[in-house]
Image (cartoon, one colour):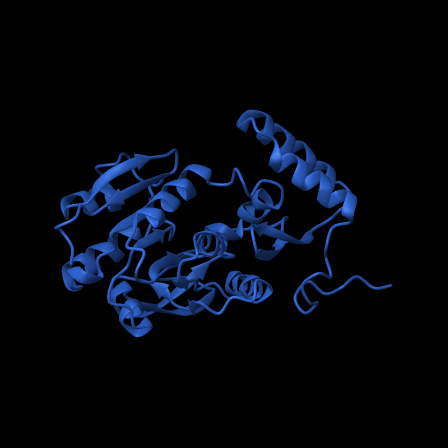
Length: 288
């Protein structure tokens, strides 16, 4: 029997056997973080040892994904490890979610959505807390976006607006540069060969999506955060400024430099610093 096509086959074509799924869930259910990390790594190697490249699994409660483990580090980690994957970042976002106004829909922006796991995580939290959620997932890379849209369809979720553009400091065009090893590190370049995509500003994305405020924005656009935010803070009305920003900071020399430093200059405060990311919040009274 021929192998199913990972692009066209319906969700479930690459499901694990019941034994394999029990192993995967066993690793993620261990109570100790250190023990869980060790078990996840070990069982991931076991489940991939037979040449498995693709798997259809529930990544978060009620949220499903087709994972391509060989060319995207993020998808590989989530395969056996969705509980520990970026756990501090997602826990911080979950706290912000719980503390927000319960009487209005929660607005989440996923800038640099990759295959959509932050968006899927927020959707799971919304279901758990019985909250309305509107999400905007921005992903310019055609293959990553195809995976994102597949995962959203597999989860039967219609609350996400997918934006196919790259964020920039101004409107225009750019080239996507694709690393050979990790699809999660696709970046924008103004020159060179590759897929050409539309560049648009963050303000334009939000206005075209019809939102008047943002509760949380996660931004991971491979070093282009500072020019994008510089234009945004200079031009966008304050009611569009996200109350909370989860920002990748591994490209910067320190929290006071680059995009994070720019946020600090505009009134944001660091509420949590992780190894690769920081959570910054705009205190009450500094936004509409």
